[in-house]
Amino acid sequence: FFRLSKVLELAGNEVRLKILYLLEEENELCPCDLSDILNMSIPAVSQHLRKLKDGNIIESRRDGQTIYYSLKEEHLKVLKPFFKYINRGNLKTLTV
Image (tube, rainbow, N blue to C red):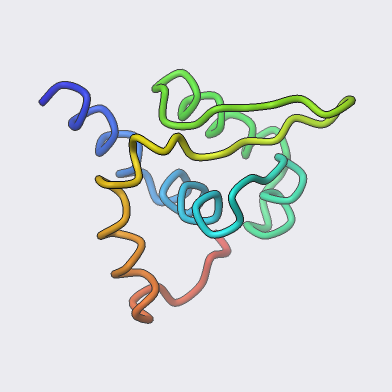
């Protein structure tokens, strides 16, 4: 119950849910890509990524100076129903 509640708590923020959705769709993205897609500053995106990483929902890998983030597989079962709902056209736009 605790782990599930933490995932849902972090995904309950609109921006973080959008980030999780994009990571699931694209497999991995860097903060600059997320910044462009969401029309947000890189520091703002990085702050959300830090919360998701601290919550153990996403993981990162470094390629040179670029850090790429991806959704941890173990959380897909919980998040997939939300992503299906979004894919059915219930989300108007990804920009904040």
